[in-house]
Structure formats: structure tokens, C-alpha cells
Length: 209
Image 1 (tube, rainbow, N blue to C red):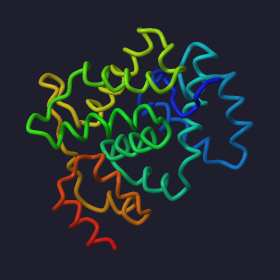
Image 2 (cartoon, rainbow, N blue to C red; image 1 turned 120 degrees about the vertical axis):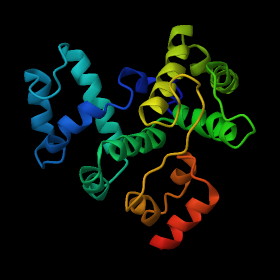
Image 3 (cartoon, rainbow, N blue to C red; image 1 turned 60 degrees about the vertical axis):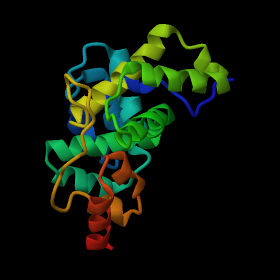
Image 4 (cartoon, rainbow, N blue to C red; image 1 turned 90 degrees about the vertical axis):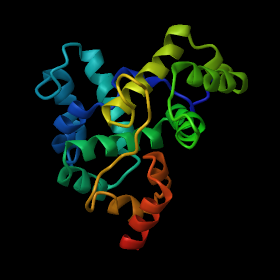
């Protein structure tokens, strides 16, 4: 049986920023199910040629939407593009255990080390360790395994947490009330995920709570 804790499905669309933003007004409506069926057939918003690809994209977006409430999307719509991408990264970490493990077992420790640079082989080591415990993951093709790593690293670059050329990690620097949602929701782990230093994290928490 498949171990559903681990999935490579995030490789189908990365952050899905454009697609999520385009579909959001539709998905937040009471008759979203009917509207989604129409979108799959008509392709008015997604602009994805393949119907199967549209279906896969919508399934992944719905997975991510299922883990948060309307308050999250109110904050999302009030944020700028940079903040919105960070919020989608938050959803990815909540939904995809493999990405969470990559991030907290490899990326965050590297950030806290004397050499805050990440390379694909570090994630391959993590994936090998997961595969030793989870037979389903071990049986993925090498192509699938490699894609989980490359897409995860692409996401880090897309949210400006990873330098495009040097692969050096960077803390997320957003000022203002952006972090209030995560602090009020007691999702303080996400401040660590964004590589905030302890002083910045403490100041944010004290300013909100």
C-alpha cells in the first residue's frame, strides 16, 4: 500500500502561484464544485491546454486550500506578490511531508550551520533515508526522485530564499503586518521555516501577542 504521508505530486506545478491566484475567486464561492467542473471543460482561467493537466492542477490547489480557512485567503489577497508566494510556500510545507522533511531536515540545519549553502546531493541523502523507511518512496524512479529535489529548490528560488547562482540561503525579509496571521494562528514554526533569526522572531511574536 502507498504511504500517503509522502507524495511527489507537488512536482506537477511547483508553487502554482499564477494558477492559484487565477482560480481563487472561483474556489471561494459557495458553488465552487460546479464552477470547477466548468473550468476543467472550458479552460477560461487556467490557460492550460490539456484537460488532464487542468484536473491535476486543480486537485493540487484544492489539497492546499483544504488546510486553511478563509482568514488565510483574506490575508493572501491583501498581500503583495512576494508575500503571496511565501504564503503558498506555507501551504506546501503543510500539505507535502516530503517538502517539509527537505526543509526542516536539510535546509534549516544548513542555514544554521557555518556554510548556509544547499546542494542537490544533500536532499538525495535525505531521500535515501526516507526510502529506507518507506518502501513506496524507495520505488520511485530516479527521474521522479530528482524532480522532487529540483522543484523544491526552484520553489526556494521563487520565494527568494535561495540565491539563483550561489545556492546560498537567505532569510525572508518582509516588514509590516504580513507575519501577524502566522503568529496569531500559533504557526510559529513557519517563522523558523522562513529562516528568521531568533531576535526578529521574538520581536514579531511580542508585537502581535
